[in-house]
Image (cartoon, rainbow, N blue to C red; front, side, top):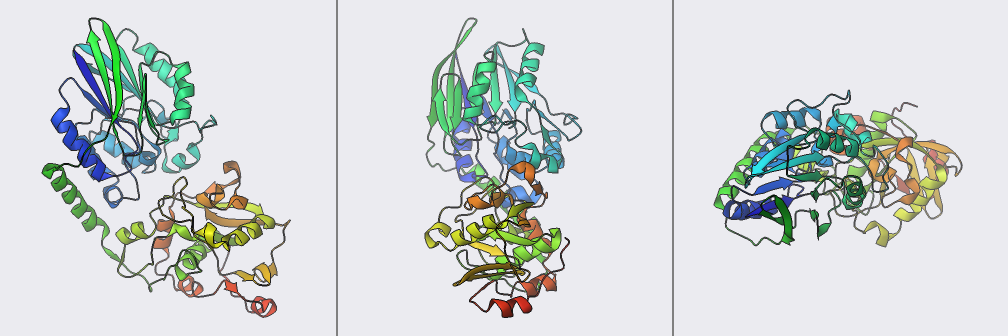
Length: 471
């Protein structure tokens, strides 16, 4: 007898792919088969996820016949209340190494679950990301704990669960949102696990005892042969799913899109439109920088223009703000020497560089873009100089900058990088910051002020307006 294990990971709200999964599993999945997801099914760039904190999105996944899933960092981004509500509304989440910040387990979320298929007992355990690729521990807690969710070392917790369930199962499956490199290291410590279903690193892997299915590209299919007491993996493959008519799923998707539109399309009051250009100074990025400086203080604010996708034009709504600022990037503050700021500014003049793909952790836009600055900054290309509050930036002086975690990691602008332990973060995303100041006339006036000028430094310095800042 055969049992088929189906698997997805890192769908990131790609509902076109999910429609194909839905159709395939409705046709092919039998009562002896299992379907699991290894996390990052949701993505907060998507309005359906934004509208009701993942409830509609989870309903669509469960309509595919989902038997269990683990948490990816994108589910964790929704925060404790959202995750807890999903679990208590029936989402089949299975996670061994996530608690709230006080180390309390999430009510009703199991560490493992037993499934009986073809007369055999399958123990399924889930783990969320804890290690970075270099095995740095607690690599994700700095962000997850802002939403009252905390990751714990997974190996010891999985082993504890295996010991507890010893004799109660015939085959063990681990749902891991840890990435292939980390999984390979942990597999050596957990030889009792028969099958790892991975995610997080977006790789395509089909090898003995391991499957990872890209980023919403493939449906993993593992074929198990049951012969007496033996369960043998006889095939491990990645299925490319063809386009298919799927009226049932399409109607469900349309229903959820309409609901999201109703929730998120309420018009928000705003003083005026703000134009945008990712490759030149624009009012929108000026506005973002001035919002950062006004909210968090510091010496100056810096932002990569690729944080936005388009102008902010009325009518403005939560839906339009998600479209304008799709990235899940947080306000971030730290100190850095002036030479790092100067080097980044010079790199922002490179036309080829600013047009590069902006990909990086948390980024959901398309291009890197040039750099924008708060209203107390003046930059001249020829002759080159940079001033903050009317004074030339000194290479060896430490400046407190406020930006986002994309630039703090050095993505696109390596000279702005500092280690995580040197930075502080705020739980908002940049779109939340932008929404907070929609009716702040001071910030809108500041957005008109040109940051990049040509010469006449002494005149500019003597007439430099600035935001009220906390030092």
